[in-house]
Length: 553
Image (cartoon, rainbow, N blue to C red):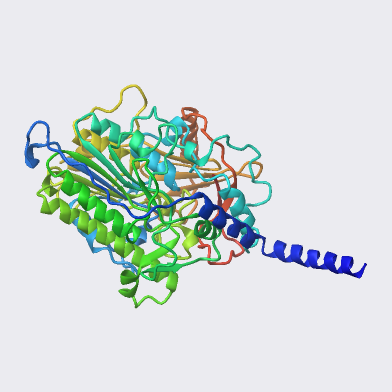
């Protein structure tokens, strides 16, 4: 019987070891599953279509080309134009701003990526059609919950898992085909439409970009910037971040074109997208076009081209250096796109818009990424939703102009539509406005503000702001709720003035309730509600007295 007791002891030891390293076991299983499921073919050449203006107009007399460049998780302080930053330098984005208009109070539609993209592409609050939460693979949230259970800062407080589950797969979560995308609107005006990069608005049931108005779509099929065995790509892994650990296990280096087979990009992803954007501009120089260049950078996992990493030897912290190198590639890409427009004589008649889908993430472990604003991605504090917001259109905007009233992602939809001479859809509530009249008004009192209120919502997290005040709500299901009132014209979000101005809070509270009553039921439920430390990035330990805001997804 000794062998039985010995076997039992061995089994107990193995089970104990497996429990201790349960997160690693699960992540290894995900990695193996993805390797087995995702077939990635060799690099292929994209032959972008060419054409001429059907009316034979030259570049100066055609409707303006429209280029929308979207960064992912770009922090306010990542742009050198926004203040002294010893880490990142963005000369090309700074030049874009110097040649156009900077919206100093530009807002993302949400504190995470996909709802912001839904607003950009629809011209509306995503909650009007049930797009409240960011689509995630069914395995992601449970794995994050498991992995975070091994961390010092749990991701999910007890009791904040949702018992309701979605009946949709990841590719089925997205923007309904009934929404009229900016690409569809512009295609009706004779524009050739091209998409490059991230989409995150659904891939099935008519929701893929090539089904939503884009004649051509080079899609980010997964989330690595380069192969893991490529010496020309430098990596930085954050063991303190459950999301980072999940991404390294689940993502691959892959692209696809117009729904075709998955293939491996030929080079570092950000540079590859830029290369293809330059080709799109060259291919369409003789006809009006809309290019939606949706970069993945600088979203995690942190991977940089070695040449950019080597150029930043003065940065000591490895992850900060990799991150800065990623932004260097992003900035260089913006410069190359602008140069391509100039080379083909298109820059004077092209509306170029640049923004980010949300603010910088606290989980990358860089405390100053959104300085001087509080909060991060996955919050509705200014650090999560105040984003770079730039437009250049020489025919309309004076170089170096600024506009200081609050504006929103869906305004870019309306501005592009007006530039193309396209009427906004009249069969639904549209939330965006054409920003050109506001920027070009000669009398500041000539026009009212673009919006009386702007609204934000992701389950437990809600916010509303007017020209001066901002009401923040943190209302996790089953736990006490919390409200803040901030005077954004005073010291931003550092002092809660709820007690001093209850009448303002009540007005904003009623406005938020009215707005919520007009929104549709969510198309898929939230899975977990997380507690986000507002002031400490994920690499830092929580301290007594820290403030937290809850977030549902």
